[in-house]
Image (cartoon, rainbow over all chains, first blue to last red; front, side, top):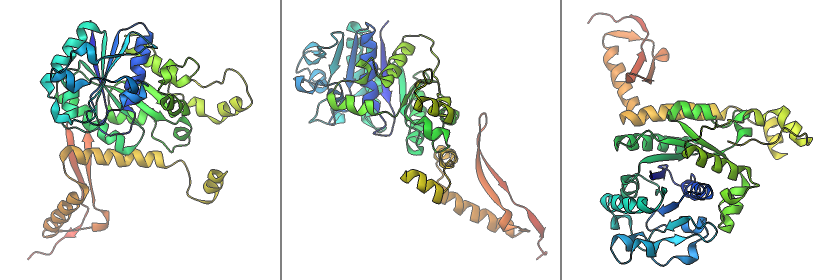
Length: 271
Length: 89
């Protein structure tokens, strides 16, 4: 049974596109047929994060307006043949698409793919309404900041008002060291406030920046602990029960010291 | 190193995470009932004016806050300590 997931946040810049790209790659690497849809019409970016920007011919609006067939607009990732991208239009605006258009499009894609992942634009206007229209399930991305969590709380309310099931949370850009010394809200603080289940915790890490620079999502990288964190989220999406470590212990003085001394067994464990 | 010096000389570290959580809680309650903090201050001033017509309250000890209850939603919780009953007009 195919599923459509919308990745949303309310606030911009918290990592929706990076999350969408990495979950798509991680699921495709598990052998799933995945299509990733950039719903941010007018400000497309998912193509760049996936490293597919040079291959765009047609886009989502072309498909909806009947100027091309869906198959012509889909870009197949050569590194991962069961991953495709449907890019957003760059020169149109969000009003070129309606929620009913998106519903039909998602239904079409669900016939050919196991997973449809929709990268939702920031905000709560038309682009958000379009993005959630065809979704079966929502993931809310937030960072440990007051502004991002405030917006996430608003989005959770809107998702529930649209009769989608309770969304799941990805806590992004987490810094265990700062949490340990009390200068960042902890995972538990944030879960207490948002009161939705946590499906993943992604630490703030340079690997995200370097992989985005190259257009090669970190979920491709078997050496990266952040890549592994995304791959664990994909397994949770597939229904596996894997605990989300909060790794505050990891940031304790003693563990940092042991790592510094190069003592094995104190390696970073990342959610 | 700069960080260390700043921490030795400047503000104590290890407090801002809790500040964030408390600010966020207040913010979310105000968002939920669509009553921004400044408007609540106006309401508070008006309520105090009305109450002051009947009793003298200890204004320094007055508390006004929105409390979010898991079951019953948002409540306005206020404590208005009375100093003495006002003289009859």
